[in-house]
Image: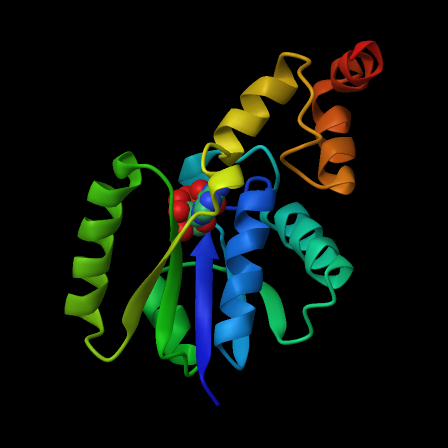
Length: 170
Ligand code: ADP
């Protein structure tokens, strides 16, 4: 049984995340999507909300070998708890590279038996990030191409009616 984890904030889950999760689910027998519960980050969605949204998205795609959970602490400890052999991370622009290089080196130091596996973003999702989605949604922009319908609705709930109004005028 080859297990991996996909750790992240997922605040909220985007189609870019989903692409990486689906591709990881094709490579590994089981994938744990680990939603980081880090109160210092002041997320828009609570960890329970983020887990719920991811579960809906994963069920929608019928990814039966994917489990979504919240976690606190170090990714490598979570990976060890799950018996995972790999941590999967997505890479977008060069700007992701420096941080991911540091993170993977630190994780390798802490847990040499766990490999970090990088997947290049699919071209159509290369510019999507949770923070950009939140910013556009908060300003009333249409985010329907970047997140699933449920996430779009939850963003509307958080930011008021602006998001829906923009969709109608487009
Ligand atoms: P973190 O705060 O740990 O970076 P994120 O939720 O922003 O958490 O991202 C989780 C993972 O998904 C990271 O590996 C990130 O690089 C990847 N990711 C995010 N957006 C995309 C995207 N559009 N395409 C590919 N990978 C992505």
